[in-house]
Length: 262
Image (cartoon, rainbow, N blue to C red; front, top):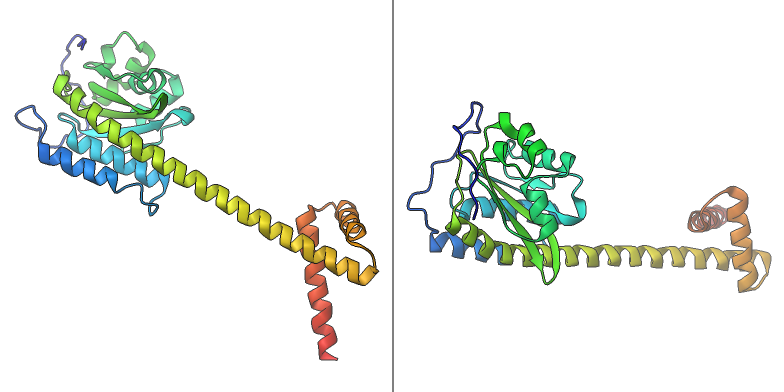
């Protein structure tokens, strides 16, 4: 992979965790992380929580990583999640400028590596923005589900040339499992949202039917005429049909209670 020209680390760099030794991937770390990913899509966590966990696991398992962010492809206008406060401005700059390694990984579906963000000619505006932040290296991994790019995981380090071939290979292996977790969680969230909308439709239909029944009884009219009367009442009062129906039902209940006290 191409490496950029090296420069000295800059002042104001984020505090780093102790560096890994040996340059390789601890098989136990990778195995534990993959197992943790498999447990994410259980329905007990929201999508933002799952994304945060994925970013945290990625920063833990990929050699050289000191922090991570995650950006969904459907929402490139803003940063999604990050593992540390100093990561947030890096991702926010990419979203604001529309360029950077994470944006490139999410839009192309390819792994993107930079060993000197401030000097990388691919994203000059982004480089100028992040130069004072003291973060030199980035490894950005697309999250792929079949032919669809779901987003990208962004890994950052203060040192230049922090991510070599082994880090990229480790990250790509992790990204395969991470994409499955994201896809499953999104599908589950979508199913839950549709179920909630269906429940709301059923509740609306129920209250409308009750209101039509009340109008049929009070006005001695048929079902079609009762529905027409309810619609006319809703238009006259400037209300949604379901809201007007609830008013009709509530008023009928109040009249029934008042009558029972007599």
